[in-house]
Amino acid sequence: MSVYDFRKLSLDQVRELVSWAEKEGWNPGLQDAELFYCADPDGFYGYFLNDLLIGGGSLVSYSGAFGFMGLFIMKPEYRNQGVGQVLWELRKNALLKRLKPNAAIGMDGVVAMQPFYQKGGFEFAFTDERHENLGKTFPNNPAISLIAKEDVSKVMELDLECFGFDRSSFIENWLFQSTGQAFKYTDENGLQGFVVIRKVMEGYKIGPLFAETLEVAEALYERCLSTVVGAKVYIDIPLSNPLAIVLTQKYQTQPMFECGRMYYGQPPVLPIHKIFGITTLELG
Image (cartoon, rainbow, N blue to C red):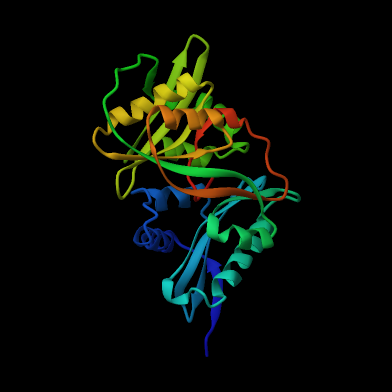
C-alpha cells in the first residue's frame, strides 16, 4: 500500500533537493541549500512515498507579511502522474496558513508551467530573463568597495525598498557567504547600490543588483565581471525595467531563458527601475 506524507524538511533534505536541481541544470550556488534554509528553517516541505522523498520545495515566509514558493522539483520517475500537482497545492495551502491575512505569495514560474500556476490563482506580473556573460577586467571604480558589517543596516534599507519586505536574516547571510562577494557603491549622498556575486556549479551568478541609477548599476556589474575574469557570469533581469535591458545590451550579454514573476494576491509595489538583478529565483 502506497502511503504519501507531506512534511517539513531537514537541512540535509534541502541539500538533497538542491542536488536534484543541479542534475536538472538549474546551476545552484555552492552554499544555496544552507543559505536558503537559514532564511526560514520552517519553510521547506517535501512529499514522501513510503518514507522516500520524491519531491519538495520552498514555502518561505518573510515574517508572515509575504511568502515565496520556489525550488519546486520532483524526482523524474514521479512526474506526469498528478503527484506534483498535489504537492504544489499542499505547499501553497501550507504557506497561506503561515502568512497573515491578505498577505501575497510570489514565485518565478517557467513559461511552460505558467498556465498551471494561473489556474492555481497566481497572476503574471513581469518576465525575468537570465543573461550570460564572461568575466573581464574593467578599471577600478573608487566608489565601490566590499560590504562590511557596519554597512549592513544601510544595505538592509535599500533591500527592503527593492524587495518590499523585511528579509534581513536571509540577506545578511547572503552578503557574507564564503563563496561569494558583496560590493557597495557609495558617494557623498551615501549608499547608492549594492550587488552580490556568488559561485555556482558552473560559473557565477549575480543577484541581487539594486541601484539608484543605471550608471551605478553598470559600475557594480563591471566590478563583478572584474572579480571573475574568464568565467561565465549570469544575471536574472526583470524585463519590466528598461534600464536593466540597456545594461545587458551595453555589455552584449546572451539571453538564456525566461521565467515569469507571478503573485497570488495583491502584488507589492516595487521601485522596478532600481532592480537590475533578481536575488534568486528560488526565494525571490
